[in-house]
Image 1 (cartoon, rainbow, N blue to C red):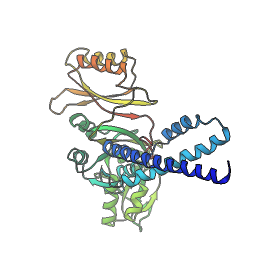
Image 2 (cartoon, helix red, strand yellow):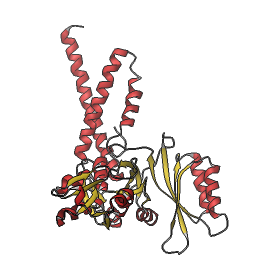
Image 3 (cartoon, rainbow, N blue to C red):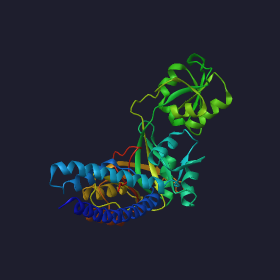
Length: 370
């Protein structure tokens, strides 16, 4: 084959690749729309690695395989940039003000989204129910302070789905106005959970405490009052946002302090039958009888499912009655999962699967990549 023939063949291949590129990007548009509807982030590095490993194995020539891996990665990078462009208008609800840990988590999960603050968990949740926002990012548990009961109750009473759970490491700093020094502080203000997480530090320094709606609002109040004797317990981002000085860093008692945030949307995803590290969230009530809870737990275990989490919460409309929240390893859509749910519904007055997630996802990645 001479140079002219080779170039003509390359042109034919490039023409075909251009048509395939348009097809691929149109499909990526559909993927982006699905992610926006279901509250899924764009990036998932583990998924990218699986795609590269699967497709590169089809290239027999080892030298060409290394170049093909680079080609695949570049293709996925272009696809992600296209998705970022398409999803730039997604409305993300959170509770608090800018600088709150929920806002930080939401920005890391959806870096191209428009953050919309709300004064309460319920208002943020309802904004998605009403269609004012596409998704809500709300805390469900802290490794030190435990579950966030208000959000759990919204999950029980509401009809939104959880399509992702993400961990955010929480570091609390002591923030004062620029003229303040550590020895000036007499009073600290923050969210009750942050105060609890820094309880030992507060006790050692003899500070008075004041509750705030959240950590960022505490920082905002300190900045507004301009009192050298008052400090906020909040994030480094809040210090930068409100012009405060970091008087002490990393003051929380537990150095492995982590908050789990759930992404809520109006549409739920159907989890695949087999996905490594997958789990589903289950809510159920039991009959008011001896061994009612034991029956439910035994059904779950009888079908070889392991519960990572099992909690009870009081039912507001029925004093001294409780509902149960469980996180169960595996898939509820597998044959075993369907049988387990069928048996559970026969023994429990109410059973509801409210979401799926992959374990150990961080607040900077998640979702499916294409």
